[in-house]
Image (cartoon, rainbow, N blue to C red):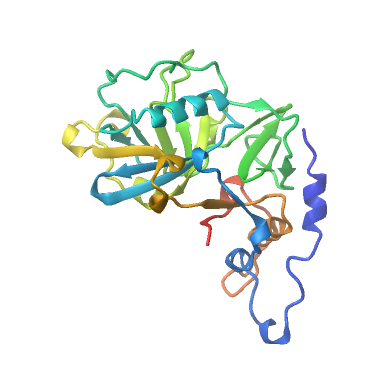
Amino acid sequence: MILPLLFMLAMQSPVVAAPAASDAAKPVTPGSVVAGAPASAWVDVPADRVLVMELTGGRRVTIALSPDFAGPHVANIVALARAHWWDGTSINRVQDNYVTQWGDATEAKPLPPGIKAPVRDYDRPAAGLAFRAMPYRDSYAAAVGHVGGWAVAEDAGRAWLPHCYGMVGVGRNPAPDTGTGAELYVAVGHSPRQLDRNIAVVGRVLSGMEVMAALPRGTGDLGFYTDPAQRTGIVRVRLMSELPTGERQVWQVMDSRSPTFADWIRVKANRKDDFYERPAAGLDICNALPPVRVRP
């Protein structure tokens, strides 16, 4: 297990500098830490790692991909986006307190050349990762923490992206099938961590969760829509790097190596402000997904 020594040392530093007299009454909150974060605390998400999915009705969902985890699946997803394969497909399943899933409802649309189900890549070696562990217990892993801008779980020398609200995974049939990446889903309920290391997790929704979580629930088995008219149409899916310059956004994630991020974690785990009377002195990894924003 990778020890959380560096993170614990960082956590011993003050949350913020001593406040001025006029600010002494203002409680420190996670929001105030984010609002006061310097530009150096943020890193850009490369435009060729951001999916932009446009749904009917002018709704947009943006998704960051993580090729450092489930790399073969992410490569398929990038190829599918470049081939415009999802254009004209739909959201086919919304299961309450579980997932929203999309792809080709007919399962008959030909895949682009070179797309095939990768070998199992549900976790990866932890060696070589700049893992910054949180000093809090987890029910599903020996340690949880962060690598760059990603929440990560680690156990016995293996590391993976946990199934948290807003995380994106690859739909598949029973093993040994691993899915191609053409069927994707996002967790829209209580974090289904029991899925960890059973399915490839490939990314995270940056914006549009209010859309994905509010879609009508399917009435068929597992939340699939029984009436095709219930499906939400996908107009197009593109990489951010493919969009015209005027349509692009530069997304940023808070760098988990930064002192500001250590402050943010500590405040979230030990809130004592106008609302919180009793600090929890703990934090679940799914409540510690690094903050994101569009670059000012």
